[in-house]
Image (cartoon, rainbow, N blue to C red):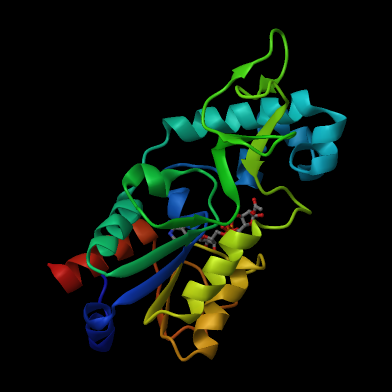
Length: 245
Ligand code: OAD
């Protein structure tokens, strides 16, 4: 059982508005490979720009959809882990709780988290290229590509590709909650991919205590008020138990 600083327990127990940023480390214990880890076997010979850019999709939508269908299958087989479940439990204790995630696997939602901002989209959804409609289920055109059930147009995965902007409204909300909370967590993220990586620094600039949970050091570690080294699936449930029993 990890040891926690006593004042951290008080901060958690007294906070009313909590914001949490998560990255792929939170899904590691569910066995979800990161984008790069998934590039094994047949996919090892492709560069990310062949699979996850607007240009790649224009050039070869069939190849891009094959890659996404393969990853969707892996993600559907994965289950939320104790870190996802501890975050669901935490949300119940706060009047205001926002979970900002860079993960596209939808595991926070499946675990039962309610107030989620998906900065990079969700791999289990698709978006109509013509009308922008978001869909959660679809079929392929006969012998062809995923087709919008509303207008028959081409669908694309509803994720942010390399070189694309993050959804502005979601980003604005994330910016707001990072600066207007009593406590900010950065969990399982390498803290290098911006703009998400800027969020804990916004909290710090606003004198909001920042807690990092990560088994490895990141550029944030030395600036965070509390560093809880270790896997999120061990540290988070222990923290919840420490505060709420
Ligand atoms: P990274 O793969 O960059 O970093 C994962 C972090 O999780 C590392 O700092 C690990 O030390 C940590 N980690 C590993 N196992 C862990 C565990 N069990 N518990 C806690 N932490 C653990 O992933 P992200 O920071 O999420 O973007 O990367 C951000 C974005 O970069 C991704 O969303 C993706 C990528 O390019 C897009 O797809 C647009």
